[in-house]
Length: 225
Image (tube, rainbow, N blue to C red; front, side, top):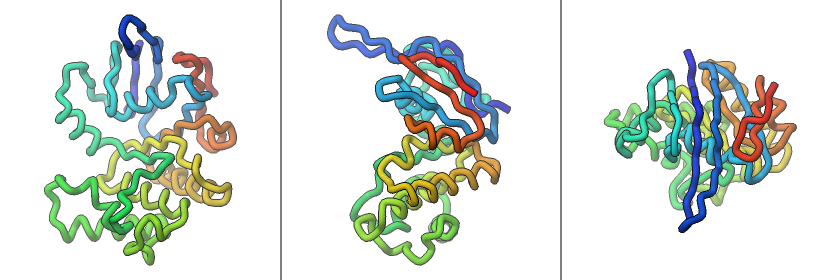
């Protein structure tokens, strides 16, 4: 099954009379359980592509499927949010943790409207913090954790709803090399457990840790291996 499928995806932004093409006819297919890097320089369109794959933004035209489900341009924001919470976990360069909450509470944030029993949600969050090596740090706030530890909290948060797809946008960009290697290992472990993992990066060394590299330049897929 295809985890992600894009056909002729375009994205343009308009500023007054100026129309700026960002994505230009993107065709892309990622199988379920793949470990893929989308690599390109700043301004290449890779973050816009991630936002469309992650249902954070809508394409201007084209066809998009997530887990073989068509994503139509007229879908409501509520429907997109529901699909996003069920299917996709996000890991951002800047962690996006809430500074006043503990590691455990940050992991629990996406479950606020899940309808699952509190005890079950807490048990799952603790299990995930153990999984990323932070079982003894669950009460610590982001300011009390290192950059690598905060990114591990973000990965645990991304997994809390058991999504099929993990989208990691420059996940090591704010980390030292040792911490970055640890984060890549966690993502690789998730791939080996059967998750579809997509890393967005400009760093060739990071891209080479994946099983397939897709290159984007000036809003077009320019190559891959």
